[in-house]
Image 1 (cartoon, rainbow, N blue to C red):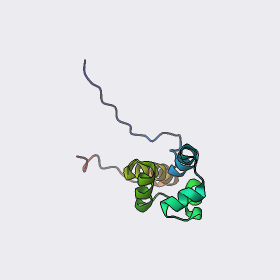
Image 2 (cartoon, one colour):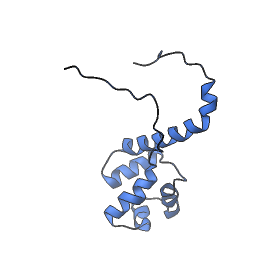
Image 3 (spheres, rainbow, N blue to C red):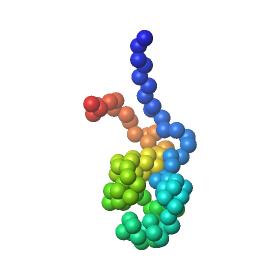
Image 4 (cartoon, rainbow, N blue to C red):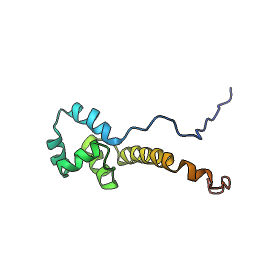
Length: 110
């Protein structure tokens, strides 16, 4: 039996989850702590945490390090989630413009 490799060339039509939603819907309820307490423990303002949870602010590398320490996971988890969200929205925004850019194959893939 041979192993088949599958590549995904197209992003799904479903919007990726913003990391702020994970904080709001999963992290804070699981820890049973308030936004005020979480913000204090993360060394950020309550307003900054609210902006992230409302999907109005992005996860920066600094914030990813803080969240990783706070949640016991990795900074790359938070950054990848933010990157997927950003790419999905940017691709939708640039869809027509990208159609006009020629593709020159896979010149720089390892």
